[in-house]
Image 1 (cartoon, rainbow, N blue to C red):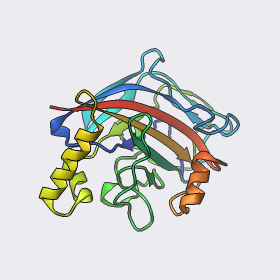
Image 2 (image 1 turned 180 degrees about the vertical axis):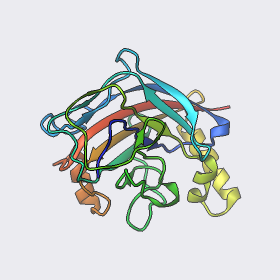
Image 3 (image 1 turned 120 degrees about the vertical axis):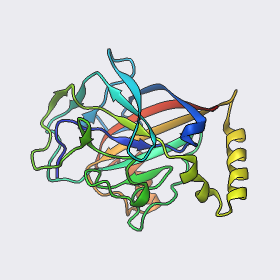
Length: 245
């Protein structure tokens, strides 16, 4: 399996109804070695919001989710490149507020893939992860990338980009409570308790691995994210604000 020369990683964020909110990407940047992979293990690095020509453009996917696609700038692939024989996994650490705790993962499939919150998205070329699997995808141009044995050689690419998609409130409410009325009450409490000046700050770290991490124990996953970081090859922070209309 491989990644051809255009990648878009669609990141699942823990947010509200797309028809009722405004979302603004405030800033985004590669992780430092303290929160991401070491310099020796770094294989892919997306540009920061400070890079010339880098912007997020709003669009909708086929499921009607609001998405933000990064364009412009160069993505760096470091030696020895991305191995086409490996499968790639993404862990999304989702927080409400800069100092918030990672939100729990809900509705992952039986293999621990997909879901909403701080979840693992598995074998992202194949978009595994049940009904909520398409928030992390690999794209080539305007279509899902086709995987081959070619891999990505080391170098700078001006056709690689990052895509951020948001689940709807309808998809989120059943996870709060099976009773629609109670779920709505919990949602209102969630929004009011986290919003500042009518805005909810959202922080996401997307960490890319070249090994399976979906069946690790909590202790093992924590070590992969913050300790040994075995298999971590890339990481990107995204800061956004959400407001209801």
